[in-house]
Image (cartoon, one colour):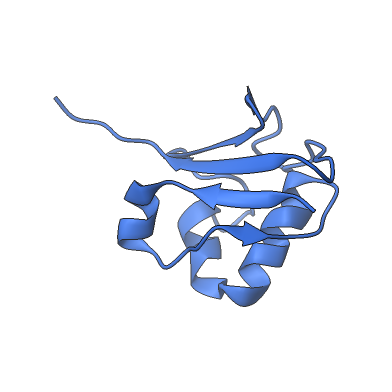
Length: 89
């Protein structure tokens, strides 16, 4: 079962514990997270369901390719990492 991890910086702004989910794509995995944590959806996705510019997602050690449809595949044993981009000087 894939596990979704959230950075500490993101956890500072939203309640989002690391979670085991089912799903064969990033979209399915995130939808499983959103089922138990609806406010997180609007923080990570825009009103078209696309990943927001300030968010990056990795499956294992590779950044996802599909930021619009989130169709990147996820194997049963993989880890999904959700990062909030940081900026500043």
